Length: 460
Image 1 (cartoon, rainbow, N blue to C red):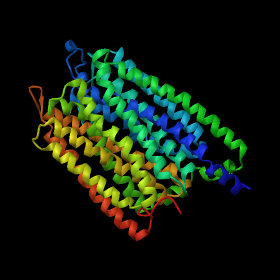
Image 2: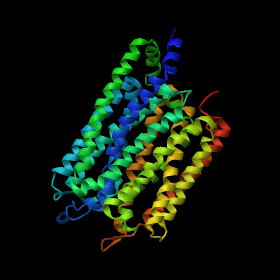
Image 3: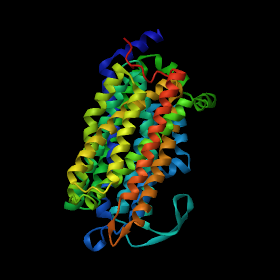
């Protein structure tokens, strides 16, 4: 009886795609907030007399990296994985939405109300801070972004587990590709709209829009919870799933023994550590190096996510039907590295910058379209909550440290207000090159252990 009902739920395309739409929109709202401050670096660093807050590149990098503070230093991603496995997707998803809203509210208060003048001496050697004066406003913003980061990452692993539950053995790569595409839409809207809102309204307006977005996400996820609860009442499969969703240290150790899992994790960290921090600093790069106006610089940065909105589901569909996931990972990391290297060269054409962002958009689509669907091929479904939490934890280490490093590099390469981005771009390039190496090793391991990364997802 259980098997029959499970098949009925799994085969219901209407329910399957409705669930995907709901959780994808919730994740998209989180992505709006995740990147809402990225295109504002130029405005944040303007003197107060010109409407800015007088932040430095180091302070901006500290804020960007703060999203991973609690996840890394308080091991909150591990806690999130346990919460997800023990309580299920309804409770974990609602908790993530509330945390995102609370963190965004703190950030909004810091930017809209707190004074940018007072500063506190901070000593935190692990972040490169040694008796460093940091604005109280920056610290408060970082606190809000860190709280948001807990909910944001918990939302990510929850949504991933929901998709695996509904699309396993079916159009899983396409589903994950669509989810990523909608998330990229959130990123693109934040990058494109943020500078205009900051210039023509107030510097805090983009954060207010983000606060409204995650508030809407709370309401939307309530709809999903009602739907999920009703489906549970209609079937006995939920009882069986509860048995497999309980957290187990034995299962966790089994995951930790998989070399493929660790290569996927390392690849994820390197790829996103090169790409996302670059995107965070890209708007000011367009202004400083390529002479783009402040309000349009975010538009060039948004080319990357807008391109991936179309291509990620397309590549996901190709992976579902054709396979070759490990090969696609190699191609995606190679394209990423070449583009970052060209950005490091002394070339200053704005048309070149646009072309590079278009190519980077393809890379931005290739690897995620196969990376996330590859995880369930290496890790059993009952261990996915713990596995995703570990992957996101390692990824957060890179996303926390790289922006801080880049901010310090930019400050040390700034003379009379003119920033030289060469050294920073070479840092990104080296990270990308390491991702290529890891991709090749993953292809080798796939052949050895037969993970099925090169095999299609859809079974004929």
